[in-house]
Length: 169
Image 1 (cartoon, rainbow, N blue to C red):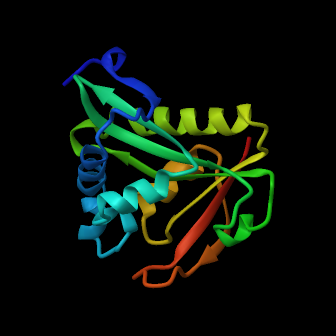
Image 2 (image 1 turned 60 degrees about the vertical axis):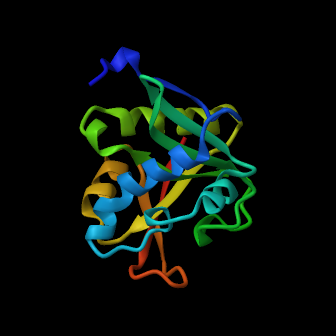
């Protein structure tokens, strides 16, 4: 496994493979699928990955030439989640993923640091996101970073209800 200083977090480049990014998302979200949660990233197509990052800032973690993590930041105005709808002070972080061999290394925290720093630098006052209300370990991760549960939402077609989390930047 590469040393932490050998992992580079940078914006997604046009030369990066969306096929590789999508496959990594599938591996990272398999744990959630195994819990019965049908998150979009569990089995999204390459085209869906492209759609979800278009108009956003997508950051990737790279080690030894491979994509091992990602987070996407949409810099408002937001149309979702509902708590942020119509607000111009909220950035939305989504598709946070760490390839399973790199979990428990602090990479998820570093990716969220990058997302929050990007939102802060762009002048946003909040960073928002959402996850299953039954994904206890993810809720603990976000609340440990200063996020608060501000709303709940049932997304169409999802097998779970989500909590909406917001952090004042």
